[in-house]
Amino acid sequence: MYKFNDGKPYHGSDQIMKGKLKGATDNQDYFYFFCPKCADKEILRILEYGEHAHEDVNPYNDKCKSKAKYGFTLVLKLFCENCGYSDFVKISNTGWQGGQHETALMR
Image 1: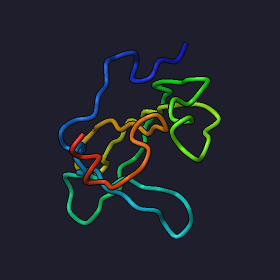
Image 2: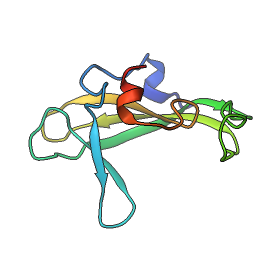
Image 3: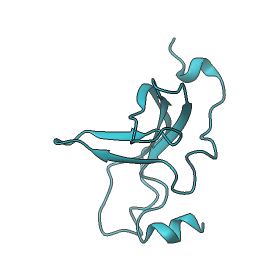
């Protein structure tokens, strides 16, 4: 059976927290993360992903105008082919649900 990160613990490092991980879309709708260690926006490769959490009911549905079908958190394992940097990032619809980025950083 497949286990994300071979079943080893994972957590994003200080290199990506507090707004340090940046990225952008390309000329279509694909999003790319930039290596926080390399100059010139070197693109990080996504090596694998996993479902970190799943909830049948999104806990923010009663607090928001929009309604999510469920709650989820995905985890991505990132790698830079240029410098060898590796890290993890999570994408979720059960975390911070809106407002200004600076406010989210103070949480």
